Every structure is written in structure tokens, then in C-alpha cells.
Length: 362
Image 1 (spheres, one colour):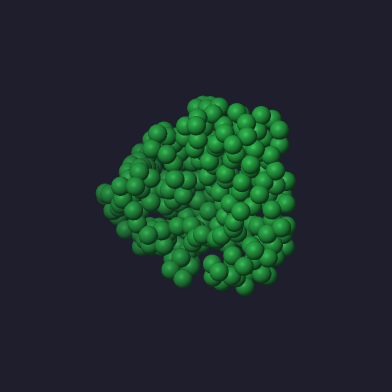
Image 2 (spheres, rainbow, N blue to C red):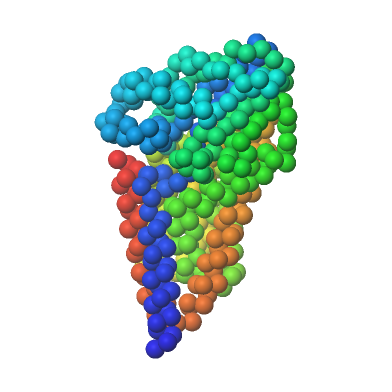
């Protein structure tokens, strides 16, 4: 009786964990991303700042206006009507210093673009007409009031060369020309970890893979290695611009991969070479991983190192998830009702995959 209660508690905990993976956004990621293109000149700075449109709506309480803005022109109209308020918000949260003297911004234009994941970005074209030899940017937007996981990817071009920088809650200041390769490497590792941990669809796919494989660490290593090899290949090809697929097609295919593996578990298919199927699906997931790096438009001089450390972060996050889940599954296999647990979990995962598939095609 005690063992039965223990297994029931484990099943309930696992089901609750799975249901918590159902996000509101179709991309199945919870990160907050922004982008910044900086032109650094001796007589002034020009910045194209891109922020998530919906988060701006949340910050300023014009959710109703945002929800009714179902086209780019209507979104741009919302920006135009709220330009003064938004400019003050940006000026308070992003400061540019020339020779350590603050430089007042001018907003020369606004527009809206759509990302590869079909999210609207609000663009602000900013001018900082201040001369100087050194430039420092302090960035606090969103991290204190909207989303503490907010990240802004900056690309800087100027007399000091091309530079990339990642603004986070822990790394809020950039001195242009001051390159810290260790810091940048660690930022991309962390970004990779965050991407897999908040990539609920990728997590559910991996969990569904290891549910029946939990009988031995060897089988887990086999399927996970195949998945890693697959997504590493297409992550590199997509980030380098060698191969490209429509994001909507990729996201829908990822959802279908979850459904396929869940059905495989439910029907108890005995696939001796499951790693081949896993490798194929890994190729699809790699395109999904590449989306964020493609949006960053990394320079040719840093794309290889950024790709390497991002992928390393993805693997670290994946290993951490498996290290937590596998011992629990291995322990649960000792109970007679474990097949029921696999059926329940796979059914729930299949339902989520179908939900995402329909949502992403819509």
C-alpha cells in the first residue's frame, strides 16, 4: 500500500510538471528578447532598438490597443500615438555616455517588424548627437519591471571594429571597444542553457524519448546522443546561413515529432534502431534552436565561437534535465504500475504536441 501511494504521488507530480510546460505562446519558449544595432561615430551614436511589442503594451497598459492591432500598420499607429511616453521610458532605461557625460536621445522614427517566430518587434531609431572618444551604454529596460530574464543582443559597428554584446540583468553595461571574450562566451553558454530549459517542446520530446529507455543508462545515452548529433548539425547549418527553412514549418514539425514519439510509446513499438528516428527528429529541432541566433545576425568574425558556446549551453541544460529525471524514472520502473505511468505521461505529452501543432499552423 505504501509503495502504491508513493508511485501515485510520483505520477501526480510528473503530470503536474508536464502541464506546467504548456505556455501561452506558440513557440513554447518563455524568454524575452530584444535587439540593438549600434553605429558608433566620433560625432554621435545611432541606435536601432527593437523590443517585444507585447511587452511594451504590458509596460504601458495599452493591452487593449495592442490586441486590436492585428496588422503592422495598426501596430505602428499605436507606437506613433504613444511615442512621447515610450521615448521617456526608453530614455530612462537606456543611457548612452560619451566621455562619461550623458547624451540625450532623439527618436527619429519608429516601425514594426515581424520575427521568424511571428512576433512583432517595435523598432525605435535613436540618435545621440554627442561627440567623444569613449562610449558607454547602460541598459536596464524590462529587467526590473517586466521580465527579469530579458536579454538584448547588441551588434556594434564603428571605428573600433565590429563587436557583439549581450545585455542581461547581470550584465547591464557595455564600454564600446572593451572586449571581454570570457564574458561573451559565458553569456552564450547561459543563453543556450536558458533556451533548452525554457524550450518546453524540446524538453517534452527528450522526456518522451527516455521514458521507455529508462531501463538502462546505455539506451538513454544512445537516443540522447543521436538527438544531440542531429540538432547540432542543423543548428550549425542554419546559423551559418547554409540551410534555411520557414520557421512555421519547423515549429509545426517539432510539435509533430513530439506526437510521433508519444504514439510510439503508447503503441509500445519495439524499434531496435530508435536512434535513427531520433537523429532525424534532432535535425528538425536544430532549426528551432537556431532561430534565436539567426535573429541576432552575428558577424562573420564571431559567429563560429558564438555558435559553439551556445550549443555547449544547450547540451549542459539537456544533461542537467536528464540527470534529474533519469534516476526518478529508474526508481519508478520498480513498481508494477510503471507501464500505466508511461501511458498516462505519453498521452498527456501527445495532447500537448497536437495542441502546439494546431496552434503553430494557425
